[in-house]
Amino acid sequence: MTVEESPLDPEVPIIDPHLHLWEILAAPGSPQLPQRFLLPELLETVTSSGHNITHTVFVECHQMYRQGAPDGMAGVGETEFVNGIAAMSASGNYGSCLVAHRIVGSADLRLGEAVRPVLEAHAARAGERFRGIRMPLAYSEGGLFGLPNDPAGKSIMRDPAFIAGAKVLCDMGFSLDVWCLHTQLEELAAVADAVPDLTIVLNHVGTPETTGTWAQRKEEAFAQWSAAIAELARRPNVLVKLGGMGMDMSAAVGTGSRDASSEVLAGEWKPLVETCIEAFSPARAMFESNFPPDRAAGTYGAVWNAFKRIAASYSPSEKADLFRGTAARTYRIDLTE
Image (cartoon, rainbow, N blue to C red; front, side):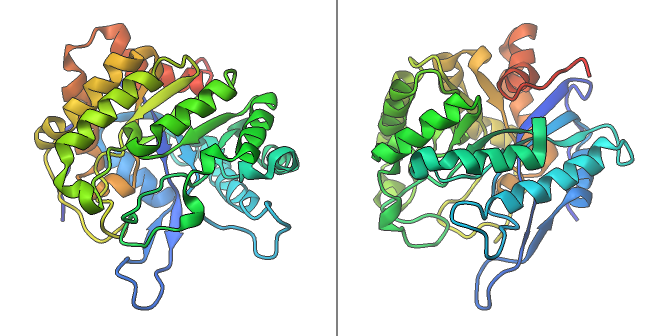
């Protein structure tokens, strides 16, 4: 049994802006293990870490899609599912951490104007908890998580229909979370330019490529990524989540864990985190756990300890933004509630 590290600065209030809830039933012959990460597992993870997690934000992960739903509407089932868990948490019967206090659902922006009723359906199911969407955009020629790439997933952000859908999202007051790789950051910058009033949240530091031929070109990938991050940060409507660095993109999610210490993780992640903070500033950056996927690197407690080690040299106000303030502003969380 893995033993958690003692939390550093356990009183620091944290909003975790990137957590998933899921029940994955692996297909026969799949290397991926069946996984359950629902309210009991999440609360055990948070509580055992000893960190002061006050709120969490759910980010879509293709769960509980409705069978037989009309085109574009299947993902509304995920929002219904998560909103039920959020309501359980809000009862106060399960502790003080408000789980899934905000929800980032799923929608296909390539629907253009037709995405409006989809977004309305999400909002109708979750009310003020629903704050925006994310859709699968990460694309690698070498494939991701042990799966071959889907050519249809290439250059989605260049599709005029996607931009039209992004404008609808903006018009309705919702945000766009994006996970893409460093080779796609130029495309994301173009989206930010095309829809300058849309709040865009780059997930997982805009992951430098590590699959395929990039596995032997890590220094080149880091240099390209650093330049692309600096350029993207010039768009004031883009923010960045600092996390998602523990995933092994060459292996199926849930196939193992390293149990690395926070010292090791901080050493590995510091160059990525500091590059992002320098480019975006703490006011536009937020730490994220990306759990359960980042369990591949270490425990929940070790991940947050690593972030606290990395942030040790920042001022109190900068730390407040990185651990809570930026997430609260982005997802409109009232900290006086």
